[in-house]
Length: 127
Image (cartoon, rainbow, N blue to C red; front, top):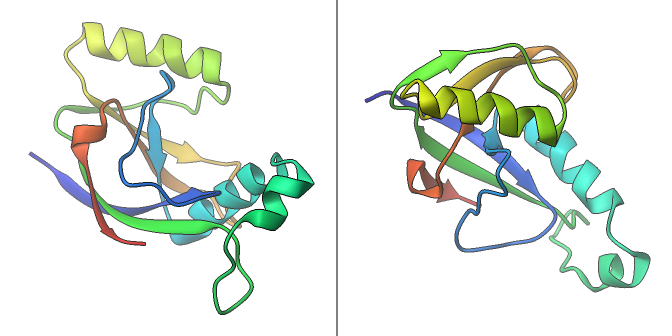
């Protein structure tokens, strides 16, 4: 088993990760902050205003996590949820349970990100 420490950005706190079908993604702190901001930007203003604010005025949440990558493959970033679902389906058929990819979109510099297929592969270290 291969374990990797990474970060996941969210608009709100939660106890357990859920897979929407396009995997659960984590990467650098910078990538997680970018992802959280994108999620926060999609929230209607009234719901956004109701989110708790930390001591620095931040409404999002960054989770530091440990990922159990298991049998992992490297792919190019499929970029859309629909293509992620397709790539994950193929990976599962081949016995893989995680993906590593060069994230060229989130964060200030390109760096690897990870996609696991099941919430049981994630352990929250801190939020």
